[in-house]
Image (cartoon, rainbow, N blue to C red; front, side):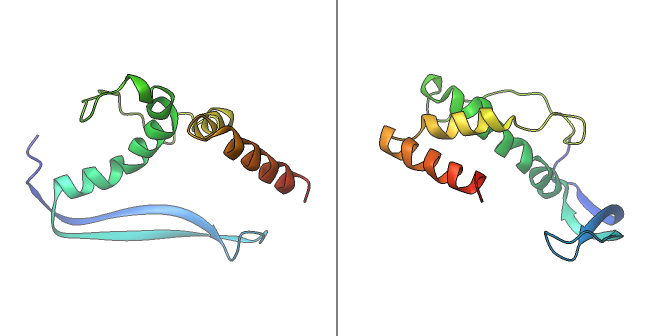
Length: 117
């Protein structure tokens, strides 16, 4: 794949939004994203950012101690709409694993406080 290839043209993407987080009304929209001499590499790197974040919060932190500096890890690309999102329990467990016991206690207390609001 020639990643230095320049992209020109446009792509239409659709979505929906609410006026605010607690709003019940939403509106659909379409964005026409224009590409004017944008390197293919830039588009691919931006598209893969959520994949990197999901890996770090899942398998990356879970297996942190087994990795060496600058290790190349191969993973399969999965479309975000088709792939399951990070399991919340797995994400919290990974976060807790990086904390001291005192930090874990404080974080759990904070979560319990949020849950009882």
